[in-house]
Picture 1 (cartoon, rainbow, N blue to C red):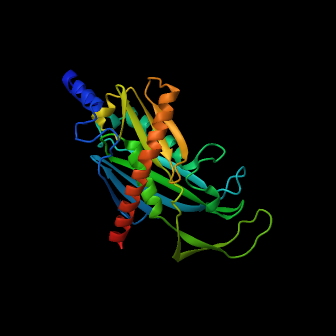
Picture 2: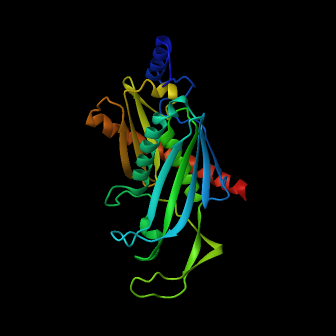
Length: 285
């Protein structure tokens, strides 16, 4: 938790009310975002995203597995976030574990949509090699290196960048099988299939401080929030998911307004992220 004096709290709140934040930004302006890709050679895809002093890494590992009996036509995707104790004092012990779980669940919901699969950023059916027998299992790991607020947005951006950097080996089925026999597969060392990230949303978190809400809140600003809503929005402007933090309730009309603002802000964020990912991949080559 960020310790602030009464004067500092007042200064932050008054600045937001006047649309002039501590670092000079307006209420709906993100900090500069920087992207690096391919930073972990052992992973199938990886990326590092810095948002101000918030610094996170995402990596993607793909392994061949067997689809579940309940969903034989879908691959499996797991998201896990680790909040390093060195990133912030509050991450030590149980606090870090609880936040890791909260972030992992929110990101998984953002990528996989609801139970029906509606709003999913990743299509699990695209991970199937042989229905009911062979599929790709995707393990997406996030690591918080340094925390200065807005972790969820930064991690979602890092995952989007890591997936755009991901190449899954091409798999050829050697022979058809019958019954419960597992088919033989040949995994290529040279041919890789690029991951389609066009449907993967970004997350825009709107943090309510006083009567106003802001995007990309710093740790100091988050310490003054009454509530926050994180909205995942894809390239088409469709809302894929929504999560709320903080104890204060929000009027439904305010939530609708926040969703409208998130859609507008997400366009700028997606465009900026796309150009940063393209620049990062160009420099990697």
